[in-house]
View 1 (cartoon, rainbow, N blue to C red):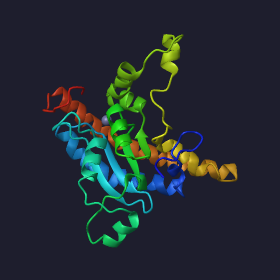
View 2 (cartoon, helix red, strand yellow):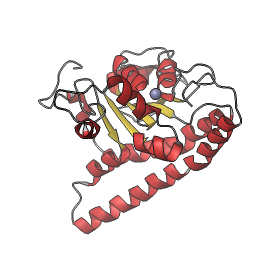
View 3 (cartoon, rainbow, N blue to C red):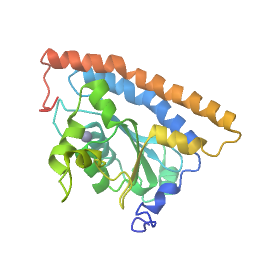
View 4 (cartoon, rainbow, N blue to C red):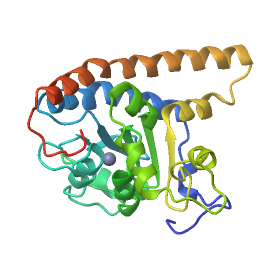
Amino acid sequence: MASTTSSSGAPTTTTIIKDPITLLSTILRLTEKRIIPLTRAGVSSGSKLFGAAILSRSSLKPLTVSTNNERESPLLHGEINCIQQYFSLPPASTPEEAEEKEEGQVYRIPTKDTIFFATHEPCSLCLSGITWAGFNEFYYLFTYEDSRDLFAIPYDMEILEEVFRVKAPGDTETTLKERPLYNRRNKFFVGRSLVELLEEGTAGIVPETEREKEREKWKKEIERIKGLYNGLSETYQEGKKGGVESASVWK
Ligand SMILES: [Zn+2]
């Protein structure tokens, strides 16, 4: 299944979600109840506020929830930390087998049967980690621009621009800047923001007034969850200024 791709080049397994709004609401709840408490502890000890989770695609149950641990290593971004923890779980070859085995233990199911969530659009390191680990569908709450503008962390964009963006013949500074920083839909994965997930989930609602009502309701909820990060960011920035100990080079 992993090798089959649609004509657009996107993995065919990414169209499995039956209800985008259920997925959206599950992710938002998970962020508030599980990821943010972990992040709060992380930022006060000098780690960045990036978190991640891996959910079973069939049950939407969270299998692993983690945050950044750059205090220990500059490579332990929220996503990488999450992937490492996921691979330390005992394996089950199918979601059904995991269900049968259950009994207080969480099992690692094949990555193609999961959905990956990153609180912030994954950087180049994490995009590679997600790809190499076989996750074919991920979502994020904050975009790169948010990380740069709201959190004073511009490195996701800067590394992609400086390391990976190569001028094509005829490119000007303007055309270069207009080009997307990576393929959000490709042979390996489809990456989308929660706002895009919301658009998909509400696109079919008629009449239009109902559609707009539903969209506004969820947009508000997305903004509420984003707002919970304000205090966390302040803690991180204050720690940075105060010279809190961290293995990270690009703070
Ligand atoms: Zn990263």
